[in-house]
Amino acid sequence: MNTFFTAFFDNLPQVVSGLGVTAEATVLGALFAFVLSFVLGLAAGHRNIVVRGVSRVIVEFFRGTSLYVQLFWLYFALPLLTGYQLTGLFCGVVAFALNFGAYGSEVVRGAISAVPRAQWEAAVALNLSPYQRMRRVILPQALAQMIPSFTNLLIQLLKATPLLWLISAADLMTVIQQLRDRTGESLVAYLTLLVCYFVIASVLTFLMNLLEKAAKARLGQHTGARGLFRSRSAASAESTAVAGTGAM
Image 1: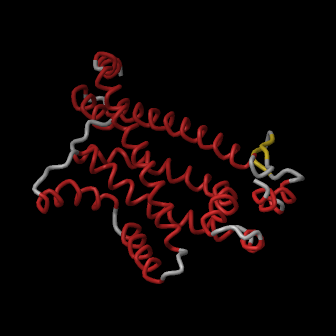
Image 2: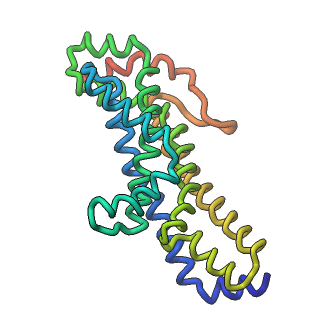
Image 3: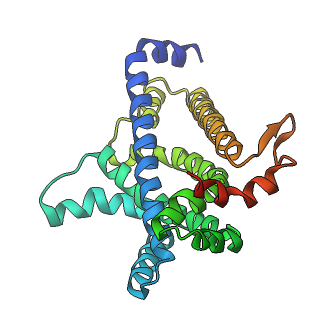
């Protein structure tokens, strides 16, 4: 145990660098997945059947194939077609964005569909354009419902980052694995890795919970000691949300 921690602190700059690569892959992958989630999720509800069909094919393909295989295809197979060797981090970000973006699109589609029909009808009655209806009425309500599911996907994405080790990206998993090979301390090495990912996941969950509270507060909801719950005025606040946007 002492041997591992001695090597750990002696190679602290490499550990920090590996942690930075893991954080970069998580943040960039999540950002692009978030954008793709909305693109595909909104396209799934489009009036044009071709747009809906393309969205469905993309979603089902990336949900129905292994992230492991997608990552390997980008890193090992795509360069054979393009003639360029892509970096492990770039391949990881793209694979994470496509895979988790496909799952996220279902979150977006479901949350938008869950907005009460009366809200849609009231927005139409106020003569709002389709863009205004979505931006000022539907999405603010749907977003509050999306955040818990997006939090789960974000944690799943974080837990998928050790796959970068398989394509030579110098992430946290790679650094710890090298220290483990050098010291032979498998138990301590992997326990340290578990703790590191748990701490990162806890921080991300805390930040997403704050975002969820802010989104719910805008709808007249608040958080009590036992968790998030609807305030007494939440129902009336949601029912008058459209009227409020009409006065803006």
